[in-house]
Image 1 (cartoon, one colour):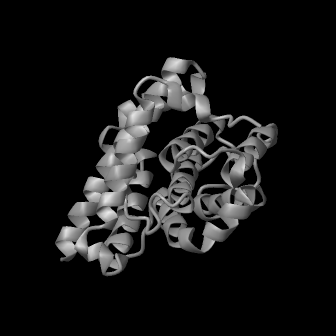
Image 2 (cartoon, rainbow, N blue to C red; image 1 turned 180 degrees about the horizontal axis):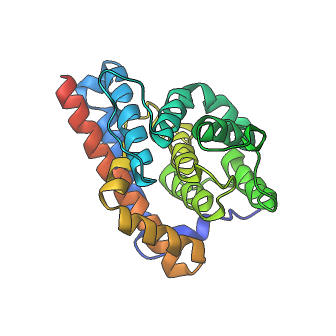
Image 3 (cartoon, helix red, strand yellow; image 1 turned 60 degrees about the vertical axis):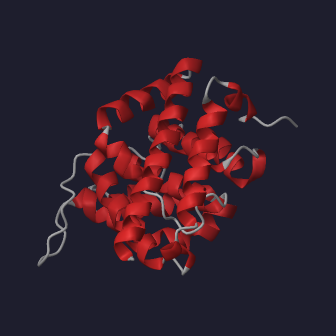
Length: 241
C-alpha cells in the first residue's frame, strides 16, 4: 500500500527542509552536555516549550517566583509538559487515548463541564482515526514531516474545542520523540513559533486549506521552527555547561 504522506516530500523544498531540521536536532544531541545525559537540557526545554505554547494561545508565559501559576492556559501547558514522557508509550500504540489525556491536562481549568474533558467534538472522530493510523505506522516519512502533519491537522481539526493549540504542539513533541528524531526531547520549536506567531497562524491556516501551496508553506515553516528549536536547545546546553 502506498504511503499517504510520501507525496508531501515531492513539494518544492520540503525534502531539503526536512533533512535540515533532522540534521539540526541530531547535532544538538551530540553536544557534549547532552552526550553526558541531556537531562538538564531536556528539563529546561520542556519548561520553555510549555511557556511558549501557552503564550501562542494568549497566556502570560511568566512563571511566578513565589506563587502558584494562576493563568489557566499556562497551568495546563505545564501539566502537559510534565506528562509527555509518561504518555509516550500510549502515543505510540493508541494516539487517540494520549490526545484525550493531553486535553484533560491542558483544559482542566478552562471548561465549565468536566464531562467534556478528553472527549472529541462530534464529527472529529474520523479524522482523528486517520491521524492515529499515521502515527502508528501507516507512513514512513521522516519524523519532522510527520510531526508537522500531526501539528497542523490538530490545529485545523480543533478536536476538543478548548486548548487545542497546546494539545497540538504537545502531540508534535511526542511525534518527534516517537520517531527517533528527538529522543531526548531537546528541541524547542515552540519558541520559534511564538516569536513569529502571526506567521505561524497564517501558515496553519494555509495547511488547513488543503491547497498544495498552503500545505507546503506550513511544512517549510515547521521544519524551520524545528531547526531554530535545535539552536535554542544548543543555547540551553551551553548554559548548562
